[in-house]
Length: 225
Figure 1 (cartoon, helix red, strand yellow):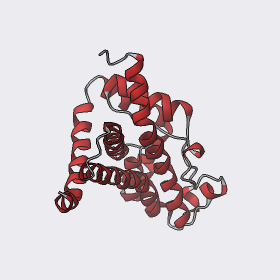
Figure 2 (tube, rainbow, N blue to C red):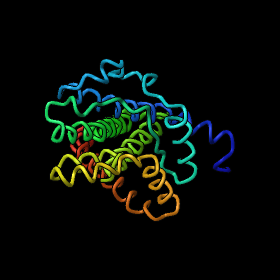
Figure 3 (cartoon, one colour):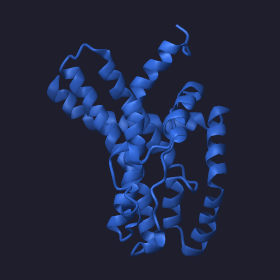
């Protein structure tokens, strides 16, 4: 079967739609919740502290781009409408911006682990319908990919903001200036993956995250099997 025939595309959409929507939406909401905890209610005031994917969906970044990248490089990256955060309103902006940034990848890690638990439970229950296992596997992969990708230490990715929060003030100010070129940084990272320059390293990082998931659910697997 051709990987790009209509039936395959439709099945890919149905398998990945829920994992991608929630992976991206909860990632953004997590930033807003942690920002509010540290004193910045900007996202809350904008009505963005919601687990409803409709609040966070960007038609291109949340739906079309992940599908295009899945068929191009087999890694469905995407983005949602960024949750507004005013770092100047945090009680300790330099220190707490790192926690706000880390909240997104942390949310993906927790979601990926949850999907891995779902896989174990489906296997233990001997569910014969393969669709549910495919969705759970997609959830594991999507969230592991988002966790690893967003931890790349370059602004405006979350990893870059974490580094900014950890650097001495003078270096942090200079490093944070990279963020003004955010769209170009994101495009360059995607291009490097497509050309095979970065995909090997990223795939190893994703595999490491999935291995951690597997290690964490191993006791549950033993208990149920």
